[in-house]
Amino acid sequence: MTTRTRYFVIASLLVLIVGLGTGLVAYYTGFQMTALARRGGPQELQYVPNNVSLVAYADVHAVMTSELRQRVHDAATVTHNGQQEFENQTGINIETDIDHIVACLDPGPQGQEGSGLVLARGRFNDAKIESLMRAHGALVEDYHGKRVITTDRKAESFSVAFVQPGLVAVGSSPLVRKAIDLQSGGDNVTNNDELMGLVRSLESGNAWAVGRFDALRSKAHLPETMTSQIPAISWFSVSSHINGGIRGVIRAETIDEQAATNLRDVLRGFMALAKMQAGAKPEYGAMLQSLELGGTGRTVALSFSVPAQVFDALGQAGHAGAPRHR
Amino acid sequence: MKQPSVGAASARILDLSLGEMLWSRRSVFLALVAGAPVVLAAVVRIATASFGPMEINGAGVTGGALFGLSIWLLYIRFIVPVLGIFYGTSLIADEVDDKTITYLFTRPIPRSAVVFGKYFAYLACTTLLILPSVVLVYLLMASIGGSLGESFPALLADLAMLAVGLAAYGALFAFVGARMKRPLVTGLVFAFGWEPAVLLFPGYLKRLTVAYYLQALVPHAMPSDSAVSILMQVFHDVPPVPVSLASLAVIIAAALWAAGRTVETREYVLEQ
Image (tube, rainbow over the protein chains, first blue to last red):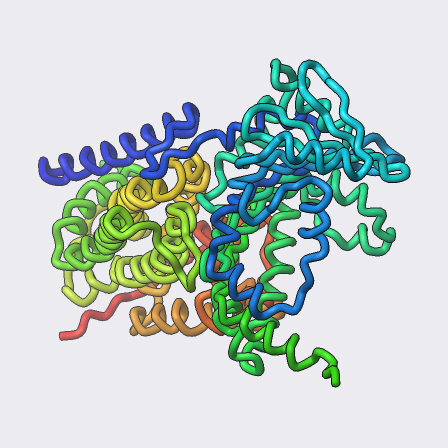
């Protein structure tokens, strides 16, 4: 071996060793060399119990002021009964009072229905909300120094609590009380390493959700023939950015690599079929072309982009199908 | 004087051929092939830092996904087969064309040691160029919108898979080069004609390719970049990893044995 060849071999091995060493250190220490520094999720996660099966976040202000929301509002003939009723009951205007929300779903014990909790950060008139809810028959109690307003609709108990200035907890009474308990510490969802790892891995977006697919499936009461067809997914996460359209990523973690491979095969088949059909519907073509399947190991990732034109087309289809009134 | 063993003779041929192979004119092509993905990764890195996250078809793409795309589109579908063809077929064919094979065969070493030594020189040459290229692409791309640690297990799998791919294609085309008159044409038809065609259709013919077993070792999802890719994915039939590794080992061993036997028994008639 000549000297020149020897130096080349040494240089190549050096690049390999340095590169692999860097990757190994990054792998074991979780060292992130990204331009975007990611926090470990919103601060409100400290009020979410550890045993929830779904956690979601939405930047309500960004979504409500987005061009997409305006297009959907103009295109869709939906009424605002739910939003209006919520404001009538609680005095909270979703469009103007709320900056962002963190929501969670507790599956509950076997044989019982699950319950939900929404933590909303924004500007709230506590006194006005309390008096409005009292006027609708709600009861006010003091729970660990916090005022909890509870409405009792038949078997469902719905509560609103002012956990701290600018933070309102709305949801089932047990979960609202649990959120108040967690303010002084306790076993909250930030102690769930698996879930928090998924939260930290989500790309920057103004809405995301992370959950245990198997826990949610067990509560869905699906027929046996259907549950046997659903892939063996443990965790799922959805991250999206809403402005003029919606773009995002859906990730699923399966129980093993074979399940992930099978799920990728199924999705590829559906994507191929959808893309072949896209010729008949050009307005959906851009959306279907944006579908990109990825992921390694036990993770399956599907990225998508729904342009605003799709919602325009849906709105036109809705208007065309609506009955004409004389 | 006792004839050296096949192993010792192969090692001597390896030592001799490695320098010849590295500093030949063909190595300019090898350097371009190994360097192009690194340059591309650097451009993507600079573009991402300057203009924000990259999007493909309107969807944001992380560095890990870009790295996986590079492995599929650059290394697996082009670089590995091309290097196997151009270097593997030339191991013996070049010596025949240059009329220098006589000098090798007059040495008191087994003839098969010539092809084995040259094959291992090819393997050393290509792995020492391609694997560092992959590592550099990984360092440049994987941290875009993600973390190096996240893609590290995939990097290890990719490095092992590419080394096995270079070994398999090299062995196969070493045999083609030793056996056939127009090995380059045969190699190109096999790698860019036969393999993509049979992988497209269901059935057992895909088992007669190297790509069928090699693609089973790739940790990244196959990209859906064209109608052909989509069709390939619809009929994607992935063998288990142990079966793929065993099959590739059989291909390497059988092709090298066949190349050795060919060189031992064939009379190379040099054109005057």
